[in-house]
Image (cartoon, rainbow over all chains, first blue to last red; front, side, top):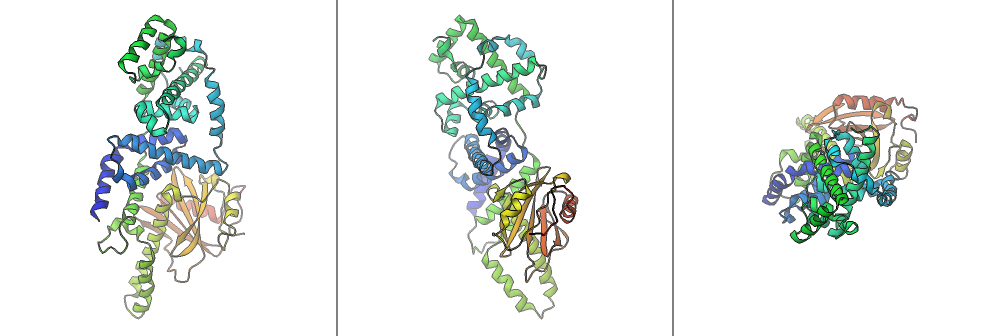
Length: 188
Length: 272
């Protein structure tokens, strides 16, 4: 095996492999489909392997997740072309408008009560999956992948101000769903 | 700073993203305004609840295996053609390309009278299996999986018309748990083949359909190559071979499904 390829394989093992859970988590929340997430991460890993020589960044996590994001959007494009999964794009516009209507009074419930509620992981995952994609990705990158605003901005190509407001809206919307479900007894 | 301008700065504060000056301003407002303070506390609770729930996923073992397999192919592909360095044995499925096939074509002539013929045929057979596995692994590099993406056999089957000179069977096997994902054109031993992609329990299964080739030694009915299972059969004048990392029993079930589709939407295989 050539030294370059050797070196590349070693870099991949050192830098990329430890991040596969992060990549899969991001792909899974974006695609909302376990099998598709595997396809996306597989493709992203291959691209990462091919370009791992150019990874100069001290932040391989953001670097890899950017590739995952690109692979997700290619996948989604294919789905839309095939007439599948156009749902999310339509939902996004509606939900984006709906977020403006988040009732401020609902934010005023006693935080302690919310804090003390025991919630099931699956129920919360489902709620996150219901968020429009641009809010979902900001939230997942921040809360699950632990990226900074600057990293999220670079990764998504958005100004930091946009990242900030998307994250705020994502949390507003998630809280609204959380409270609705809690009061309906679905999520206690 | 007031209630209307504090907006998403609340999130930036709890994420520790504000510089000291802005943080002090937001904090001053929160001290003075109960409503905004509660909003801040509520969001902080949401964030810490999310983190406590550990909402991330663990990459499945099947994915790690697929990545390893895919990289072996990529590694071998990235080596210079004609390189005299020995390739790693694990990269064997990637040994494709014209050079190798010229060598193969020469062999039967040179060795026809030789007692080695039997072993050459055996080797050719295993190389054919390698080819099938290589096609499978390549397809798992997601860009390559499908040319037509559809779970409907009414979409996938007509797609092949005009692209290939036979009509592959595309049974609906959803009742047996095999979900049709799509189809594509692929090459096997320089022959165009129709690849149908099914999925079960997250495992991708490629079914490659081809016209019987002139020099095909024929695959064994079942084979294991580098952790992948193969199952081949003949149907309606076509050679079919299924390949996957799924349990070989499932491939047997798949073959049964192809030969006797039971789903209401199924159709007799082989009809154009």
